[in-house]
Image 1: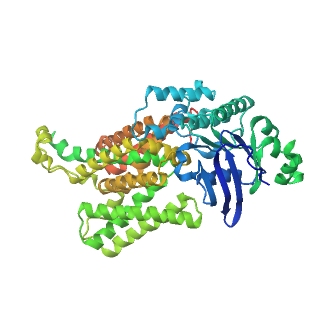
Image 2: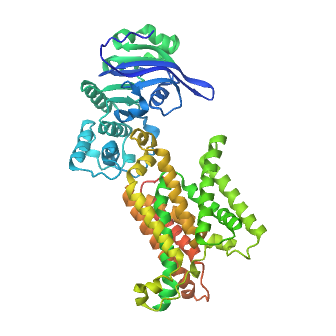
Image 3: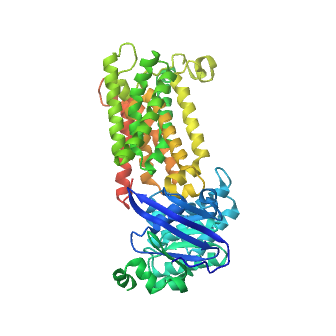
Amino acid sequence: MVDPTPFPRSEVLSVSGLTVSYDGKLALDGAEAHVPRGTLTAIVGPNGAGKSTFLKAVLGLEPSTGEVRAFGRPVAGVLDRIAYVPQRAAVDWSFPVRVFDVVLMGAYRRTGLLGRITTALRAEVAEALDRTGMADLADRQIGALSGGQQQRVFLARALMSRAELFLLDEPFAGVDAATEAAIISVLQGLRDGGATLLSVHHDLSTVSSYFDRVLLLNRRTVAEGTVATTFTRERLATTYGAALLQAAIV
Amino acid sequence: MAEFLALSLPPILVAALAALACALPGNFLILSRRAMLGDAISHVVLPGIVAAFLLTGSSAGWVMGAGALVAAGLSALMIEAVTRRSGMEPGAAMAVVFTTMFAAGVLLLEVTGTGAIHLDVEHALYGNLESLIWLSAEGLHSLVDPAALADLPPQLGRLALIAAGIALALVVFWRPLAMTVFDPVFARGQGIRVRWVMAGLTAATALAAVAAFQAVGSILTISMLICPAATARLLTAGLARQVWLAVAFAVTSAVMGYVLAGYAPVWLGAGFTVSAAGMIATVSGAMLGLALLVTSQRAPARL
């Protein structure tokens, strides 16, 4: 069911036979993905389909079997070229740290243990905050931010890592419309700059306008390809089960 | 002055250094919600010391310290094993491991007799701060007299070294430590060896706890690992500021507690003094209470 790659470009991420089990229950059962460079792919599927697990397993954060290669090499060796933007709930929001410092953490590979925080680096942090619409909130404690603002801090931090592959887990969960527009334009800007992005996405009504590719996942890969060829009613029905689809589409 | 130098200065310095050494890792224990780990390590120090004495027959400081460090490492491994196998929350696993090991240590003390070894349950709880005296102190000039300085209680030099070592490690590993405690998943993506960082934090905690335990006992050790950092946590939203504040609170409560223990009962007309370690712990607890009162007027803070 997987479409042949319509892009003659090099494959940035290739996943085959990716399997994850929790206590004997399969969360992922041989998932596949073949993602060409410079694309923005939505990972779509019902609750419990293993979408977040897929991202974590790709990064090696979950024990898994199967093969994952990024930039043609095992992921563990190229983590510096990959940025992961997790779901919002993943950190302690009462942690005593300012927005600026969180974003600066994205440059750790460049600063190292004791490297100086140069003026240029500070300017880069300011630019990342500006791109995500957070410039005014640099000095806020992160717990004092709204959900959408917290999400954008993570995105700004990912921008600092100068990654070529971005894996985002529901970047639009719980954000307002303005934030959603800001985030998607940053993601599309990254894609246009040559980066490759995969994002777990829940809102089927925006898939076509936001993304150029889609990965339909329900523990295994149901279909993968361009939105035009793959994001079809028939394949969504296979992914969600016909009855659920009605509810999901309204 | 000679009396102050001989009787009060060494215990005040030891208490302050012990408080400092504990308060530094304490900040990160609290932020990573591992406060109980300090509690656990401080308690397993006792069986470690007793076992080291029984095995070697020596009560030299470094033998005891080594025994305590081994016990601390062992208990950290046991806590992880219990957490993994049972699916219990880490706090419960810690409570199980450290109460069992502490109780075993007390039994071991009783069975083997305390006559030969300068250790009993009261010392284990409160340490022997008041016994740290500097007999060679004759006046201010003793502070620059190498012969007199060599006679300072050995705990002082050891604690100074350990406190300095922990402070240095904290400065060098500040970024990976902060990143690991804040967001371990992201830290891993940035190439930080998260498990090693957390093991280093555990080791620093154990080192501080063992060094402090020998001088000030387990109650003050636990108090100093948690109270100053928790107080600072309530009062600021910046990590560096929190650590500085914790250091200030730790040293202040050590000095204030020592002075109060020696003089407060006398001021109140009583003819005795109270345990310095107990008073220091009480003062640092009172500081936390005060901070709670102040901040409860504002937005609720979560520990």
